Amino acid sequence: MSSDPWGRVDETGTVYVRTADGEQVVGSWQAGSPDEALAYFERKYEGLVVEIGLLERRVKTTDLSAKDAQAAIDHIREQVDAHHAVGDLDALRTRLDKLVETVEARREERKAQRAKQSDEARHAKEDLVAEAEQLAQSDQWRAAGERLRALVDTWKGLPRLDRKSDDELWHRFSHARSAFSKRRKAHFAALDAQREEARKTKEKLVGEAEALSGSTDWGPTAARYRELMAEWKAAGRAQREHEDDLWNRFRGAQDVFFAARSSVFAERDAEQAENLKLKEELAQEAEKILPVTDLKAARAAFRSINERWEAIGHVPRDARPKVEGRMHAVERAIQESEEAEWRRTNPEARARAEGLTGQLQAAVDKLQAQIEAARSAGNTSKADKLQKELDGRQALLDQALKGLQEFGG
Image (cartoon, rainbow, N blue to C red; front, top):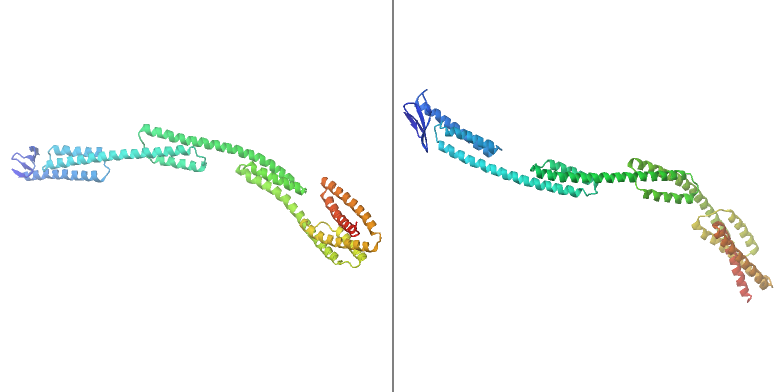
């Protein structure tokens, strides 16, 4: 008979293992010596030890499911309970019991983790729904649309909840997206209608602008182009594919008109600048008459200068008062010399002065009436010309009145 601390072989070849519940039959061995029998069943025990060790490592280091782990434990336990090995079987049962506890703890841990993940997923989806419902009211069509698409991608990456909760949240989420899409579609439909109306309006404006481009009625046409521009801005934008073409036509028509006007104005400005130069030269020539030493020669010289002056056209508006003022100053000086000469040489100066004063006053009154009539008729050019004549007559009248005063009248 052969034995070791955990088993023995009796004289019939029966192998026993010692357990806490007493000896248990392992099997019968007839093929060799008792030592070989013990060694064989001890190797089977070592195999169970290795198998349990491997299972312990898998449970600790892999994501082996609790169900598969428990099935593996049950399979090993069946072999241990069958007593087909020689060794400390009670120690193996203790390790298996601890492994069951570990697996159960892992099961509870994973259950809690799944519950936590589910709770986090629920909160995450509720947050997505709340944001989607807020975005559904937004008028920031591009930004809100892009954000909603991003929320869909985020939703797809989240775990599913229980079917009822997941369906309810998805229904709200989907409804918010649909509401936004419906509002956006309505907005752009209205925008398209507005742009079509703007296109029609701008087509009419372009037509009028092109019709006016050849006009030479500079003032009224320029004013109408300003009105057309205001109407253009008020019309809003047409569709993108029409807006640029319409604007190019509209702007092109204006450019044709204003380029022509600028050319004409440039020629006129150059002519008036040349006229100003000529009148300044005449004013300078007239100023050389002063002081008057020979009244007859002075009158003749001024008359010659004035005839040449009248033959010259318009000068720039802002330069007119100064250059005309120079000529009027010379004319008044000559008139004053005439008055002085007249008073010195004519013994009946008073009577003539009175007669002249009356004539001049009548002339002044007549000119004033003519000026008022010209301005009422809108003939500014005639009124300006009459005003110059009135200024001269008024100056003469002033001199005549002054002469009367000198005579004591």
